Length: 116
Image 1 (cartoon, helix red, strand yellow):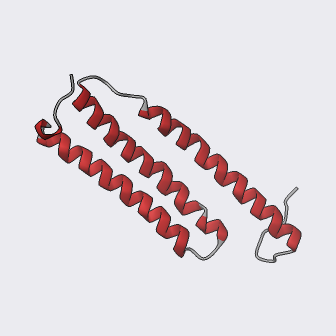
Image 2 (image 1 turned 90 degrees about the vertical axis):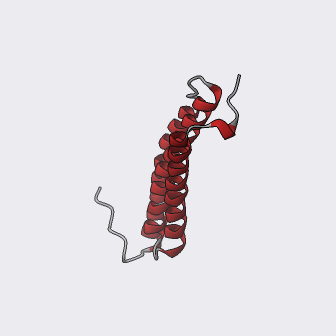
């Protein structure tokens, strides 16, 4: 049996709202960083942090809300957090390496030379 949303305790509403605002704010900062930062290497850094921490906060809000409303522990959102935490840095590394390879083959002087 689920609890009606109107009957949620105030501390749950405040906690869920705080996590949602924090998560959406971090994701917004990542999106603004993607638009505003000048170089490609700086641009890929901001959304990665915003995505990881933003999803984490939104995931906590979802776990808390659905655990209280459903009167049982809901933890399947943790899988989403694990997948995002694992795939986002890997994607960042692959994009950065591809861009670095491209810049080195084009002879861009602002890119460090290969150390090997």
